[in-house]
Length: 174
Ligand SMILES: [Zn+2]
Picture 1 (cartoon, rainbow, N blue to C red):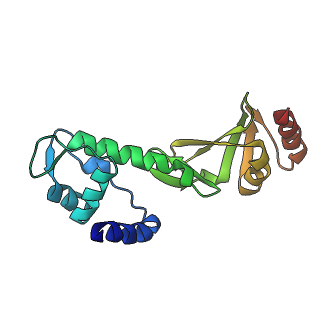
Picture 2 (tube, helix red, strand yellow; picture 1 turned 30 degrees about the horizontal axis):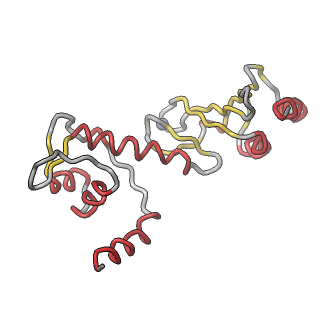
């Protein structure tokens, strides 16, 4: 009971803290003790125990608990990937930076998708890596406010080409 309530208290605090862990620090072929993992990332041992509860694999049959480097890498990579959806409007998830990033020069390219919606492409403002996200037809006006649209389906568009965007927008709605 005590454990449950303390876990709950922690849960109330946790969602605001979103740390990105540098998985490149992990030695993939190394087996870590919990305290070693904690030291590696500068977190409390309890944080590591929480990761285990959240699905981080441990090496079976080992007491004290040990964690394989490759499992640790996979756990954090997947977790950080799944935060894609937490990007703010105007942000993209950069695979290289492993976090949401702004679009370089606020420039984007739009590609209409067959099933409806749009693929929005941009370059990471920090590292120049290609980033993309999918947006719905409804959100297109918002995209146009946030970004400078460079091309639509590969066609270059000029300033004040709102009509063109709206034409494509309407086509996308069919
Ligand atoms: Zn980046």
